[in-house]
Each structure stands twice: as structure tokens, then as C-alpha cells.
Image (tube, rainbow, N blue to C red; front, side, top):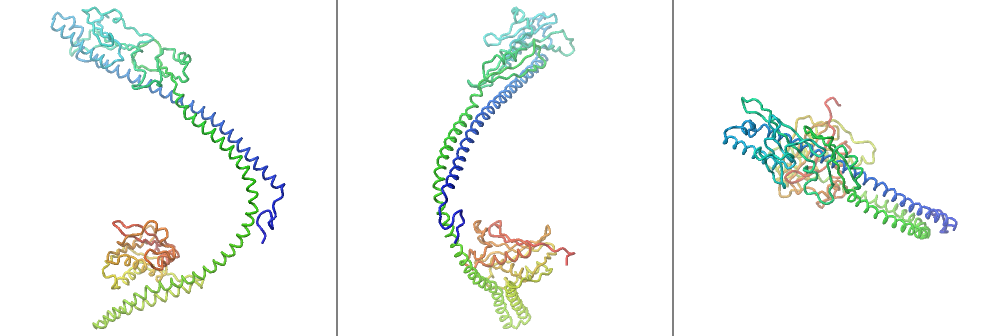
Length: 544
């Protein structure tokens, strides 16, 4: 027998072909090593660039978020200052402080002092507050001394450096008119507040040593960022709406966040180097394997010839299997005929009892049942004989609910299932399909019998017929142990059984349903048990 390889009769390959193949393997190994090296270098460059770009983008977003937070803080502070200027503690403050009534003046001083102290304690970003009269004279001033809020009244001579609040490169100011009391005219009193850049919270709480370092710059943010020695820097403008300042403020942040982000890149470099070493080792191994592979080629060709002989034996074994299948088919026929024979036996027993009682009408109906059993058995034989005839069994429009009812009545008549409760539910009809009544009756008879046999101590068999979405569905539900998930994938295979039977009943049912263009499946029943569901194409009223 000729081999399938490049050599025949067990002859070895020529040395030239060996050299050519080894040359190709060597070239492929070298190319693989070069490709891995180039890919590693490219991955390192792209990875480093990607990490740096991601670090810069994240740092810029973080700086913009901090600037937005500072703008929100300044807006909230200005709103609180406006509320303070309109509060009852400052209404008519200029008149009360200048009143001839010592008690009124002292009360007003205490009210103003308390309001300003409370405000400074709640707003550490505000450096100082000055209450000025209509003539611009400082009436009251509040600031921090050693971090503690202090208030100076006019009688204590407000320090000149506090009285003069002017916007500067590092200071923002805001002016608010003091509200007059009801029915009074405004005297022109003004509340002036100042926020210094050094007092703003530039770093988030809990920031560690690696956090970004931020400063406030006025009209010089870009220069400060360019002069920074840190690898990361970003600038975000501060709107400071409602505040007066000398120039435009910006938040400038610098840091070394890229160092942390480069750690994954370092790990990636290690992986690339290790992969490079592995590929070079594989190149050496492949070179060695090439020689071994060529030596094994002759062995493979010999094995191929042996395989041809084995396949010939397999063909002979397949022929023997076909003979065995014929025997299994005979067993299947016996299984299918046994069901109507059992029904006929039950009907004959019932007819004998009816005749003994003199109930000829009941005996006549039971004899009709025997006749139907004989017809069912004959139909099974005809279907088996049809395997040798390519023509399909006749199909005609039938009412499926009638076929189902007949199968249920047949099983109910069996005294062995007297402890099983049968429930039959049929939805709105008609439930017409095109098919062979004998074959479909055999399907439902098998399903109902299986549902009864799985409950030897009694239980419930619920049969339902419904129509929807252009199909007619028949369900047979029991209260048995159900079907395990591992058995569902094989339960419709021939000769597969879970109850020590031939394993042909469900496979025959599945084949009949498939021939009618339908489906048969099994699922769990809520509350325990199994549900077998048959779906067939519905026959419309206009169809023949």
C-alpha cells in the first residue's frame, strides 16, 4: 500500500530536502526573535509615551478640579459676606456706635464683635474684614493674630494696615453695602473683606508627600509653570466672580505623579525582556526539534499505512454495527406495540367485567377501545414497513385536542394508574394541525404513560393544550423527581434511559415531532416534577 507522504516504500528523504527544511526552520526562528525584539522596543516606546501623556492629562484635570473648588469656595464666601452685611447685627451699626446712649453703643459693639468673630472662625480663607462708615472711616476691623480672630473697635484705634484694604497681586477684596433697618435711610456704611492667596486651601485634606504642590500666580502663571523643575505642571484660571484683584489669578500646580504611573511600565519592560529570552530559547529548541521531526517523518508514514489498515477494519466494524442496529430496531418495534397491547388488555378486562354485570353498552365501548388498539398496533407496523418505502405517511388536518384526550382516556382506563389524578386543560380552540393522528397519538400516549410510570405511588398528571403565535403547544406535566440537567442533553437519544427500559420511547417521539415540523423539549415544573412540551405549527382556518 502506497504511503501518503513525499516518500514511498519506506525510503528516507534526500539530504538536500533535509537541508532545505532546516534552513526554513532556522530562518523562521531568526525572524521570530527579530520580530519579538522590534515589538518589545516598540511597546516600550509606546507604553512610556502613553503613560506620560496619561499622567499629564490626569494632572491637568486634577488642577482644573482644584481651581473649580477654589472658585466655589470664593463664591460661597462672598454669599456669606453678603448675608452678614444684611444681618440684623450690622443694621444701623453706624448710628448705634455713634449714639449718646452708652448702653446702646456697648450692645452694638458686642453684637458686631460677635458676628465678625463667628464669621472669621467659620471662614479661615478670609484674612480681614473692615466695617467703614459713610465717610470712609474704619468703624470696626477684624483680622487674625497668631491664627486667632481678633476684633478692633474704633475706640481701640484700628491699625492703619487693617483699615487700608486695597486689592493687590496676592489679595482679593469685596465690598458690600450694610443694610439699614426698616424705615431708615442708608447711611452709606460698607463692609469690606479681603482674601489673601496664602490663606486659600491649595492642597486637599490628607494629601501625602507625593501630592501636587500648588501656588496662586497673578498674570505670571505660565512663567511660573515653565520655570518649575518638576516633570508635571499645569495651570488653571480662577474666575473669582465678584472679587476685585490686581490682575488675573491662576492656580499653578507642579508634582511628580509620573513616577508612580511609570511603575506599570517598568513591570512591562521586565515581561518583554523575559519574553525575548523565552523566544530565543524556543528558537534553539525549534532547531533541535526540526531534526527530530524529520527523523520521525518515516515513522509517521509507516503509521499512515497502518492507519489505512485500521480504517478498513473500522468499515467492517461499521457493517457489523448496522446489523446490530437492525436488532435494536426490532426491540423498538416491540416496545411501541407493547403500549397498545397493554391498553387492549385493560379494555378486554373491563369488557369482561361489564358483561358479567350485564352492561352491554359499556362492553361495546370497551370493545371499540380494543379495536382502536388493534388499529394503533397496525399503524405502528405500517410505519415500520414505510422505512422501506420512500413515500411519507398520509397527513391531514386533525384536531389535536381530540388526539390528546383519546391518549389520556386510554391511560386513565389502566387500573394500575388508579392513584394518579389526571387533569386536562384546553385553551380556546381550534387546535388544528396537519399531521398523522396515529403517529401523534403515539407521541402523547408515550408521554402520558411515562408521566404515570414515574409516579408509582400516585401523583398528578396535568395535560394542557393551548394555541398562540401560530403554533399549538401540548404540555404533559408530572410530580415526579424531574429530569436532571445532565440527562436533558441525552434524554431524546436512542437507547438512553433513566428507568431501566429500552430507551426508545422518547427517541421515537422526538423523531415523529421533528417529522411534523415541531419541537419536543423538557424543563423543570415549578413545585417539583418535569414538563414535556410539544409544539406543532398551527393550521389556519383557511388552510385545507
